[in-house]
Amino acid sequence: MENRSHALLAGLFTLLLGLAALASVWWFGGQREATRDYVVVTRQNVTGLSPQAQVRYRGIGVGKVQSIQLDPDDVRNILIRIRVGAEVPVTRGTTAKLGYQGVTGIAHVLLEEGGSDATPLSGSDGQAPRIAMQQSLIEELSEVGGATMRQARDLLANANQLLNAENRQRVAQTLSNLEASTGRADASLARLQQLLSPENVRLLNATLARTEQAAGQAGPFFAEARELVARLKSVSEKLDATLGDSPVGGAGALVPRLNELSAELSASSRQFNRVLQRLEDAPQSLIFGNPQPAPGPGEAGFAAPAAPANTRGNQ
Image (cartoon, rainbow, N blue to C red; front, side):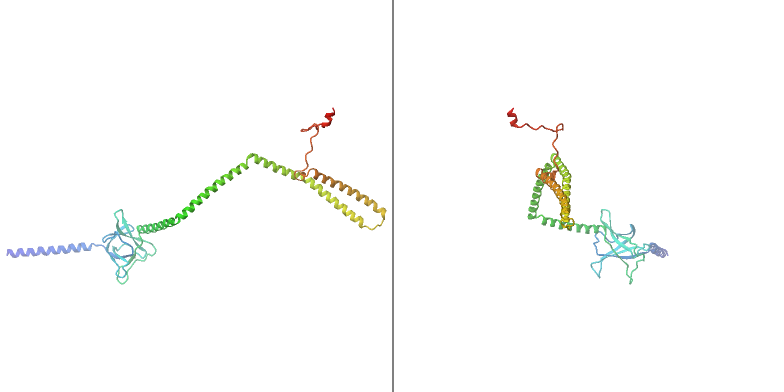
């Protein structure tokens, strides 16, 4: 009887232990949160990303990376399966990026909301919805750095081609010519400075003043010449009128007119002789005007004329 009772107790204990284990499994399994699976598609390198890596939504941890594999339909694509909480608002405007934590280089998937389309993202044919991955900051810097290095290499190659031996010789010759031109320009500036010295500037100003004065003094001479020409023209017109009139009064009426005409011709001839004499005595008066009269006795600058030599000898 005792053996049977011990066996019954052992069986009850085993049964209760199994029920407790099942209850524990059910308890812990029932506390799991609802999740959703998504597939992030990229053609970039995913260095540093591994399964069980974090998935963050705008910096907040919302899930884990489940697997990383190549796309069997297109080996250029990399499929990253992630599992996030069902409450995470993944929409058609959501994009993914690779983020790196500190200096360790551990990568995580960063979900960001673009705001272009707020429609919830859903899959088709029972497959997990797909999210496109954008370039990360490090990849953008790598591409820009690579392009910059290539441009720098091309620039150095062009510079080496430009500065070959022939071009260097031409540049040296150009610099030599430029130096020689600079020397000549310095000499020309020195001559110009010497030409524009205060004394030369003073002389130039005096010459311009004299020229202006001469132009003013030549005005009366040309006015007198114009008056003389006008008088000669008048005399000529009177002569034509006298000769053209019919002899109404005969010779007696013609004689007074001829006398008057002869007097005007004499006056015009004397005036014309004075103009010619002035031109003969002082032709420079056309430019510099009439010469100033010599100072008389008692005026500044007067000098008595010297006595003739034969007068001294007679004394």
